[in-house]
Length: 240
Image (cartoon, rainbow, N blue to C red; front, side, top):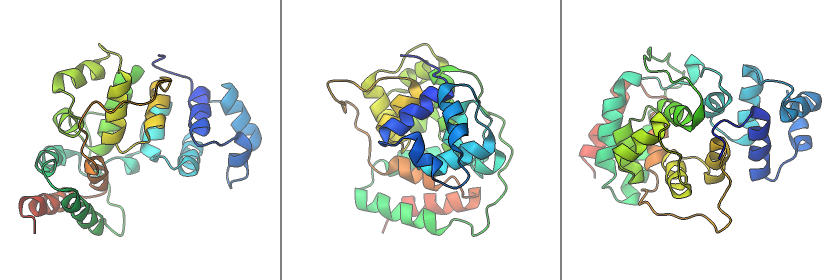
């Protein structure tokens, strides 16, 4: 496993996951075939406008593609209320015991609270930098305002195991990547690509009890100010 594939290698893997070629993307507005070819060859580094365009074309969260490319995540793509991470963690711990129908109801409620005009995010003091899978995982968590205890509650991995992944002391195993992808609401093959890992020839294993929809619920909270996250938390405390 290579911890830090070049962006051209990463882009090619993301294209392969979707059965796409550079020609497919070059037909889209704001994407130039020559620029794409240079990117794929590693002769050109991505820039913010291109990253946003590629994220849309690949149906990826723009913040995640910024994180994977090594660019700082723009302020407007970060969680609006980083100071509400404890509430997000409390919600995850509470919601993991909900029935799927209740989780879907919470998701619909959270999305109904999205502001019509994006709110400026509060300052975050834990922006993640560095290379390797640990730094990438930390950035993916920051993009979702998710704590290590919250991720442990969703995945079934222990906090100790997650800490070792975050610090780079351990390389993620395939079953761990599968659980992390589900918890982060990412395509499994995309997280393997981001991690520089090959998909197992024997197929994916699901060794951890990941709760469906919990990762999606966490993502639904990203545009919400702290007061509205509290409303969702109140709904979880008082299910119908």
